[in-house]
Image (tube, rainbow over the protein chains, first blue to last red):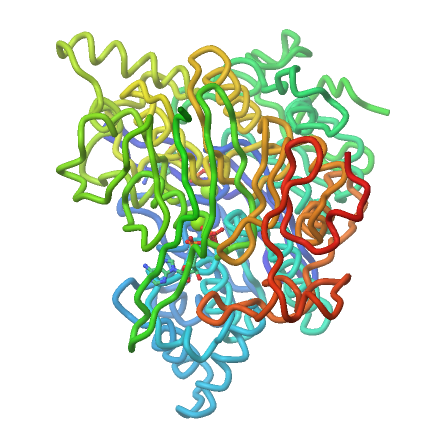
Length: 321
Length: 314
Ligand SMILES: Nc1ncnc2c1ncn2[C@@H]1O[C@H](COP(=O)(O)OP(=O)(O)OP(=O)(O)O)[C@@H](O)[C@H]1O
Ligand SMILES: Nc1ncnc2c1ncn2[C@@H]1O[C@H](COP(=O)(O)OP(=O)(O)OP(=O)(O)O)[C@@H](O)[C@H]1O
Ligand SMILES: [Mg+2]
Ligand SMILES: [Mg+2]
């Protein structure tokens, strides 16, 4: 059984101009010990689709579909039960580290309270666990750090403290939203190695949202690529990254700077503008920016279907081997 | 005269319960108009602090900061002198720098003059420049994704036609295509509008692509500075070497880069001798006792390492 199995997830958010569909039928599953990498366009609904699982959406949002966490549906679960699970078995590192840290409480207070509440440790034991966690995420002088407040730390240090809090209760699933964007590459490597160790030794399942395709490449087992509220391609890491088949995935990889390319040459961004939610073009949401689009792409929304070694939402499939 | 010049800047923060932390311990940096200077380094090494010092948001304990020949002195933001309007900072965390209760459009318009209609036109142009649909202007910060907020913050900085922009992690939370677009935008700002840019980023691939020169910072000081390409191909400082080697490659191979071994240093208690010595694979006796200064190497390069001179660079 998968640790988490999300099926046909749809999210609508209220806006002044009416409800807007932000996530439009997303499926994925993650197994114990597995890292699922999620990448895609900025604004494509990656964060919202994760916040929906934890009941953290703005008021008057609507969520359809199911999200079975160890067999129980998070979407329909009573709030109180969800609160119990969230933070203990299912932990999240938020994209904005300010969201996860309380500005008025010392780091030590936030970390030890969390451990004490969920793991029922006494004061001394929770203090020890807190120091251990800060060492794991490589915060210098952990004992002094426990007495300090979030604004005393650099952006990347705050991000690491948020990771420490998320890992505090030995969750079964960690949803990490851009956990290493504020980190330099050597500290990032340390965090990725920590996650890699936890998934090997403790069967931690990880959903890792990141724009850094290098990070995906180094740790994800499988990847899902989002565009405009949908998954457009998913499959094994090496298949998708070395041989992308959706034109969007292809263009995304093409946009990366290449060491051999001279700096006089501009990087190749995808032409056109990303669609605004609520104003998606008909048919495939990517079609106005796609060089391979044909008539059907403008008429029908392509479904994510099995296509050889992966799942793909592109009937044209121009990069098929 | 350089557009922005920081000389031997030292910044201290008070630590809770007494004492202080020397977040920047004597760092120099020059940004000329039309040039892109990359600033990279370990998380917590003092990059944002240096950026804040550069625009007068934190007081400098020692050293000097000059913008277009005039000293930048810390003042309350309300009393920001007129000439500093052309020196802009885009903060690391775009969410905390945007006002949650004002629309994106009105915040972008802050730095604009002229009639209401003219400002509205300019706001739409600026949105276009940073790749946001012109329709976003009536929305509030919380209605945007992380990457969209970042672009609003950049559009806002561009509104006052700056000659130097300090950008603290402007590329984080952008997808590869949006990054490419922004990197191209930065290159154009430097080339066409002669804006000088100080680009702080952990995204080394982008820095490598757009920066004319790079400064590598470690624990409050510059470890190495120089023109981008030579520095990348043959780093002079072991810390630069470790940093460049740890960039993960998007090749699908599943290779986890190495992190730096050893204790993460605490700026309140920097190691004696070379600041990097406890984690350096090439450490020898002298490094433990004597701190190397930033010394010139061939081809406009500088490095603070006892071994740099013997690497045959240049
Ligand atoms: N509270 C909200 N009200 C209305 N729209 C919102 C709200 N929060 C987010 N959105 C919109 O929902 C869409 C998806 O946002 P989301 O934060 O999930 O994107 P994302 O894929 O995580 O992007 P990024 O990579 O930039 O973080 C965006 O277009 C955003 O503008
Ligand atoms: N307001 C503050 N009070 C006390 N110490 C601070 C404060 N702000 C930063 N520091 C400390 O100063 C040092 C440098 O922080 P800074 O934010 O400049 O790092 P950075 O290089 O920008 O890191 P990152 O890449 O993680 O953003 C860190 O050790 C941090 O803990
Ligand atoms: Mg997001
Ligand atoms: Mg910073």
